[in-house]
Length: 200
Image 1 (tube, helix red, strand yellow):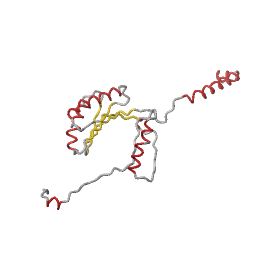
Image 2: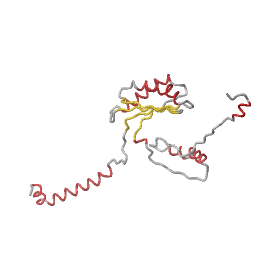
Image 3: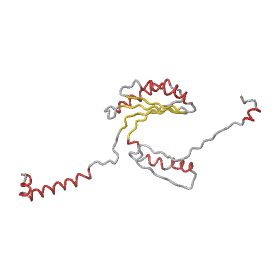
Image 4: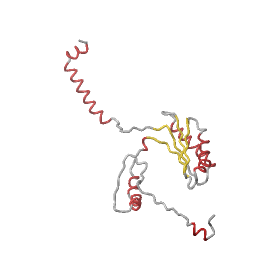
């Protein structure tokens, strides 16, 4: 039998008192511990989103992606750059080492690099720098149903519910999703164009 076992058996009252004190302190401390189901984790990447309405992927690549890439390559700490040029939109993702202590400074440097590249971009292009983290995941998702048209319901939510939620302390962003966007396609009538002498 070890000395600790012999001491515990000899001093049963003292051991019981110590156990009760530990339980009381534990019961007091547990509710005060910070608990997070999803702790804050900063992702090791920064995205640059640059819409260019009406431009083809080739034009987006040459006029938007290339100037931004050249500017981002000069930023210290950037490990890799991945770019996607699509119809009317450019997406550039810059990655860096996970757990870098200077993440905020790196994001600021990328923002400065994007600002320097603005002079080479078309006037209508306004690139946005987005730094991702688990804090960007929606905390609360609310569903709304109504007999109204989808667009009418979305407009009403934008006028009433969205401002009320944005006024709550700690709310960063409120968006209304799920509304189908209406698109109108105009197809020329070849016969009318030919009659007007406009058909090539």
